[in-house]
Image (cartoon, rainbow, N blue to C red; front, side):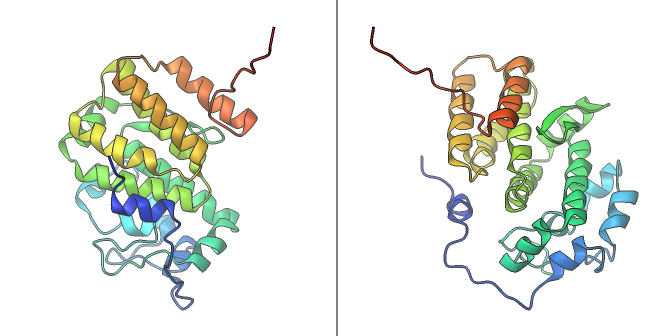
Length: 246
């Protein structure tokens, strides 16, 4: 099955797309110097006032492009697509990266999850996760939001968080039969699992998902071990044993 067009563009680093050096809304917003529109809020105000405001996060459709800018236009025409010069400046600003992580934490809580280890990307269930998991299944527009979130994390050199998210969901599906509808699995298999520009990680996670779809259990133990392996060796893929002649 061929990859969706937007995923092909993402994996190619949006080949042929030019940078608009005059457009810097995303950088200014994440520097806490520009208010997002139409909500007219600074990023610090969103982080402070919207946490656990699940109605706001569910029914407001204008904020997601500001919190997770990517090099594609969204449905909010008052938000700007991420520019290359912005991405470079944002990655070099430690305060911006901390705010990106805070935005990710905000949405994880909305989805019934929490970031247990920011270094490995390990995720756990949050308090009240059952209700939040049910909301994901009942409001599939969140599948599109998650695709955007993962693309943004990749643009910010935070792909280890993508791996943590993907494998947490896989563990929930495989071991606990949670988040396991056909629609969510389709979004995960075709979109989310391909929001990794690291080819080795993408291929290993894709193979692991395929094994789980065929009945092999992806346990919490395997999940935690895979993220620890990535932290220690730089690769999530399991090392291959060398064959020697007898």
